[in-house]
Image 1 (tube, helix red, strand yellow):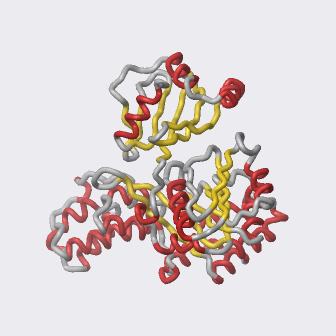
Image 2: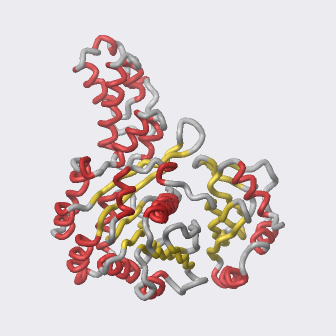
Image 3: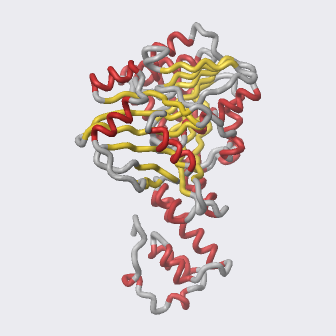
Length: 406
């Protein structure tokens, strides 16, 4: 048995997500989003190299020796798969492994909004899932494809580097293709996909202009395309895709994207109050008005459209985060730390704190202490008749919350 298996078994047993083996440090696991060192001696470079060489495929070993990094999938039979990257840094050999469970979480397990679930039944178009690395994009897409597997009868082609979640054929036929093993590149696999009679195509990552262009073409020619992009908001995703193209092609791409893009899902993972993590979502649904904004270079208006598009299933990230707070899943501090639009979040936090004061669940002074924008919080409390409770309060003596905006 490879020696790394004992670390991976520990990771699985403790519901972790990542294992890091780096020269000069004990093995490190990520549990509930936090890195924790195992109570073991630091690993030497030779030990890490030995752990790597026990599991690395021959093709990847040659690549690793030639260019100092390589990606592959490693499997613990009957337990889980692990997306693996081996590399070298200033200290020596290193390896990072991400847990990919055999059991695919369903849309119900993840608590996905109905607006996202409905996208799976679209006949064609492009759906982009965005967010930072490690935010659960692959898990969300796997759940959506599993839903398609149960409710559609289609041919699904996944193109990934490496293959992560493996779907068994239920009502759909799945063709999993791995870059470097089953095909040369994303763009080559996409070109070939047009001749493989797919109904649904998953593009693991849109890395370059040609891959993006082919994915848009696939959506335009009658396929349902799921893809990931590394952006932090739904509205900025549209600009990121268009900006990949040279200026003389951007008008054409805007037209193509406006007719093919069906939704942008942006997500982030938050630590639960109890053990585990939960996702917050920003959802942009592309209807005719949104398509017009994309076509007419008015994407700066998309945040406002999301705020007013609740009847279409749209939701802003801050709305989603505050819903998780109100439902008791995450702390107010966790929500604020995950927010991108801090100014808007300040308003929402203060509204939430004021509501707690009015319901008798929070003292006015404590509301000021928990606020990230205290002058506004004090003003609101005074306006609503709580000024007497704040007499003698010296804000300058209070500890400032992290990331306070004043």
